[in-house]
Length: 142
View 1 (cartoon, helix red, strand yellow):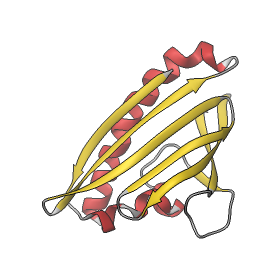
View 2: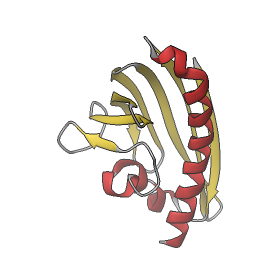
View 3: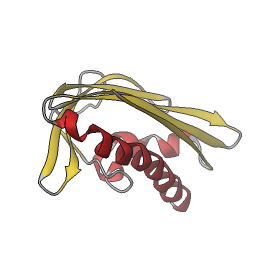
């Protein structure tokens, strides 16, 4: 099992940051793991999406379901399909005039994907941190 966690302080309020987690057009501007909604709006607990991990010929499609959604505060999810079981969360906490954004999660690789866990796992950990830095720059520039 792979675990990750990271955080970043963004000089904007939670209401300016949160849309970048739930709106596909905004999410695609900072995340390498693009989401494709599988269920119709509104977006909330029970909503499903599909994300794709990997590069080149080694790609995995994973179905995710939102398990908790508190506007401007928190989003959690768990996987329902695919070769990687994933449970994760984003938390947004007001911090002065800005927002402390933290993320954490666990990924369990199954089948042949277990063999790639050491390689892909290291990339996922560093990628998650880089994505939050990209999110910070994007939101603060808006």
